[in-house]
Image (spheres, rainbow, N blue to C red):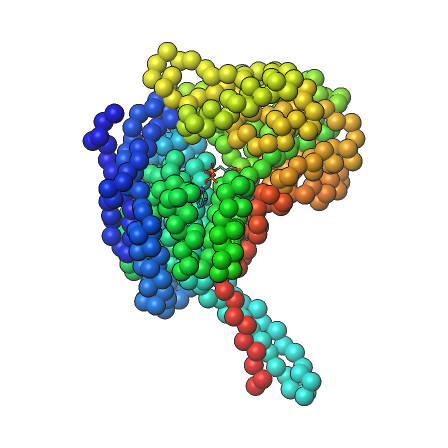
Length: 488
Ligand code: NAD
């Protein structure tokens, strides 16, 4: 393996820093070495947190909301000026189609900074008047202040989108941040750091540390006593570990965690739209979106027709190199993750599933055979309590089951430890509203999927998360509110 690959550095107190300890960043497209990533040890993580803490007492701590909004706008422009570099980095790390990286990942990165710049400019506090027992008219108002140091820990599935979703509001509210991107997708976080460095933030306001979770940068960061709040996106099990650590010092946490989302298709749906929508919600990003539908419930009269139509869609998806014309699906994030997905393909057979399509690794006869691809896969015939219907696979796979009644399908959709999102396909809007509010989830999409207005609350119920981010909900999480009561 070449040792001349570029190094991805940490960024602490305004300086880019190498470390002796490095780990390889391998592309899942073809197994090639992309870079060597400098892993932060406990001392360097400590320096990052100290720099972030010190920045709170410097000029950043005295900025107005409007000044911070200007900084966010400069970052948005900075990303745009290097847009294609971000696209190339995201694609190389993750294997996704170039068009997706352009349209979704990097575009949303820019949009996140613009949205929170606007929101912080317009945000106000509470104001209430009250007659006190002594007859005087008192009033109370609240002011928004930063927590201080916020730790941001992000996953690999939508690296730029999910990281900026947290960095933008955290900075908008005046915090200093230490980010720890996923070890699987460190490149766009490093580019973002360069953009933020060039945007001229005071040193220590933004820090990047690379590394893994347990026994590495992730754990060193979350357990550091000077971290005031932790925002995390990733697996539910990791969220639970971080919550235990955050209990020490009663630090604030916001968690966006795993899911086992359902799509529900009623017989009165627009059939073609529902098939296309479920194909999207099951196979987008090779099924590696927390919101993807891995359980599909279809009303019995259209069940056979729906399974056949989704099979045709799945088999029509073009798997390939990210820049191939017309490519729909790239690789999984890594060989290791593909092993996990393949283990579920095996388990599904053991549990008695009918494999309608897929369930295997494609062969290409070229460098992609060193990559991490799988075929889009559809199962039928499993019971609702099968492990493959209960556990998050996080791959391009769904199980389709028939249902007969509205109350029955609501109960079956809710029969999970998770509660992130549901997609509903029906033309009966009365039913759509009635049913939607009965799902124990953070989000319901009716006749669409993954369409986000960033002002709305986003998050999960049950094991899918804790708290909500988005719009003023983000501003509330990333702020301390102080209430001031005045007896004039
Ligand atoms: P993961 O939990 O393995 O890792 C996420 C991040 O946490 C990484 O940066 C990792 O290094 C770090 N980490 C791991 N263990 C840690 C520890 N003990 N202490 C501190 N940091 C630690 O998750 P992943 O595999 O990267 O991401 C996939 C998961 O994320 C899926 O379950 C998916 O559903 C979920 N996800 C949820 C949302 C949402 O909005 N709800 C969005 C995207 C992904």
